[in-house]
Image (cartoon, rainbow, N blue to C red):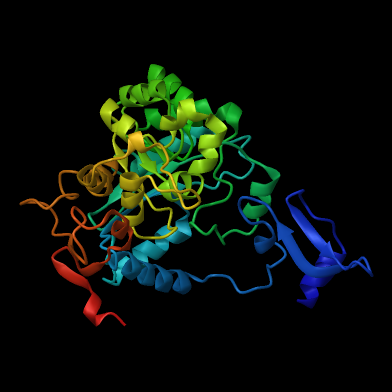
Length: 391
């Protein structure tokens, strides 16, 4: 703590998103750091003396995380945020040990640095051999495609200096592409059949521009964190073959009332409009963002449209039936991974992945949906979780 305190005494906060709290009497920093950055800076700089995650830590944590997923019936994950190489290596180690109990489809997160002089054409052509198409791997672990987002900031470059210690989601902090070069990057990705995943609707116009140069209708590019989508945007997404995944824990349950106030009553149905998107022909899969990890919360969100702060429901006209919400949590997730022919439903010839649940999703009281857990989870025909045997 002394070395950290000395460092703080000798410097000013690097960005406006950090404040060093000072003693009101002495005017000296008191050791408390306030931070408003979306991704942490202080944690990765001023706390640098603290022990970091090792490879073995990540392997142990990932093995434990898979069991947590199994406890609520999850048998496969799709990581649209992108994964740094150290996280991919942890997945590889878990699979090599025969310890994997969750199938994983991962998108790669690249570390670009400042990103100004990157030769995207040359780099992506080189990476196409392992990221293009369905990538490399098997039914247990596959890496394919790339995650991207806008921008390179002083915050992200500072965070990147902590490498190889990556973010809480296991992605590189400097994975952003400068906005003025994003179209160039996306076109090169399309030319090399590298599927793109992202988490903002700001990409819609760019995807249409890419499609004019290299058709992407069959490439299943993904926009995650479904927030606000208009009727026109839903039609355009369908025309481009874009898939979407949700973040209902945030945009319905926690922030839905805020979005409704911002948009006004005439646009309430633009908030997480899963029914509208499905009717337009857009594939929408459910996601948790790990807050919490269980998929039964997003299922409950889409059926009930409940908000944690209000008594009413957010855009109730966009509610799904229980059957349709269940499809979005299963077969639609398999579609995002190009695997709807081998998983996502219990049928002859598909992978033997299934769960015996604690309650009947289709008939239980609506508010009990979120509390459903797995009594037994089977992956690849092997029992990987048994509640009555859980520690």
